[in-house]
Image (tube, rainbow, N blue to C red; front, side, top):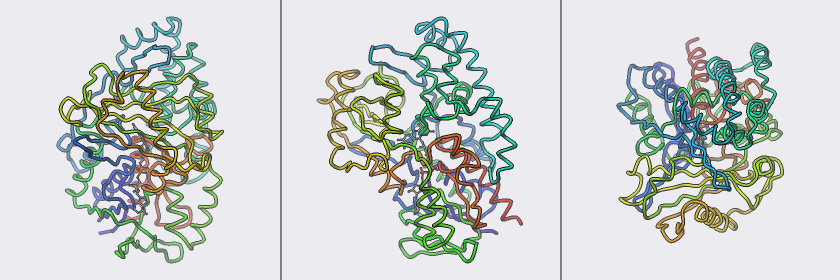
Length: 493
Ligand SMILES: Cc1cc2nc3c(=O)[nH]c(=O)nc-3n(C[C@H](O)[C@H](O)[C@H](O)COP(=O)(O)OP(=O)(O)OC[C@H]3O[C@@H](n4cnc5c(N)ncnc54)[C@H](O)[C@@H]3O)c2cc1C
């Protein structure tokens, strides 16, 4: 029986570990923190449950597949609840737009903004379905190890105008600015600027239209716990609270791992779900390969960070949707400040998470839990001491929500805390505190992203947001499929 290790229990690491163990490889999942989940960590405070990261679950089939590998059923471990509308989008002038896959309701929403755009929207749906088929179904879970594989995909990319941005392609179908924002903001959920991310990412529209938007009962943390339960049931082992300090190599092969506790073990193959820069620079320290790869990563563009305020509040708000986007007065200008200029602007666009409207069990009775998230520049572009400015920034966000959406909010808050770019760096070893690893650019996609198998160290593999296809739960679960395919083939040789 072959033995493999996966470093890091994020969604990508968990999905890969399940795939390996399901195929009969004795798999150890080694996580540095006290809880699994990575970006999907969670806290329990004063009776409230706060998920740290992902809240929008799309393509539930890619998760169900992890159970089906051994004939099991995801529903024995977790209940996924549908969310309607998927998102409520709100602008400073008070306009609301409920976004969902209900054709009739969505058409009505579009007509409210601009009746002339209904026809353009229909053509956009066709475009989205095409890129979904080419970009997600066909290419989403295959490893791009050589340039040849990129060339093979090139005709599809050209046909779908992949060099254009999501915003530009959306604008070719619809005229209304608010509708353009409504159909392009999704890339922000995976760290991509809609003005720079490839038009291929318009596939998210089709992904959500067909697969829906879901919420795990009890929070995303419960989905993580479900994956762990399933992994352990099929014989895998999870080692928590013991960061890997070194990937041991002999020549151009990995031999095993060493952890902070002194625990060490030999493995036939090792995959890392940890941050890509951390893996090369810190875990392969002293090796030529590690140093070279780290230098090359320094020249790449990393996605921004996030600032998240979590707050538990007295009272309930059945009228506030589960997922809200509170757009600011600027769209492109704000994103250019964040992505390019490294400016922390006076204005912001917020994503507001309100899980208790779907699942009241996440707060004490007659209370609600929320988080508000603002994209902010990463630490390389905006090297501020977040400990100094965080409290004021959180206050500004809460004031904004109070003025715009929840009168009297500040008086009703019973617990609150925030999470900064510095925390991403400290807790997750995230390079520059980036929330989504490498920026989603065409020039950093597929073959141009970190490969699922290292080019030099032959039994070292990568999985997660820094690899193909990129960030987001469906993305990293797809990367696990690509990496597992390679590992299982190599281990069988
Ligand atoms: C606030 C926020 C909201 C988001 N919302 C959504 C959403 O709604 N929907 C969606 O699909 N996506 C969302 N995303 C993106 C998504 O959460 C991530 O892209 C995805 O979870 C990343 O998974 P990953 O496999 O790359 O691993 P990560 O989550 O990055 O986990 C990596 C793991 O490696 C561990 N590790 C690091 N170094 C070591 C070491 N030396 N030894 C051992 N372990 C180590 C870390 O502790 C961590 O547990 C969101 C992200 C954030 C931050």
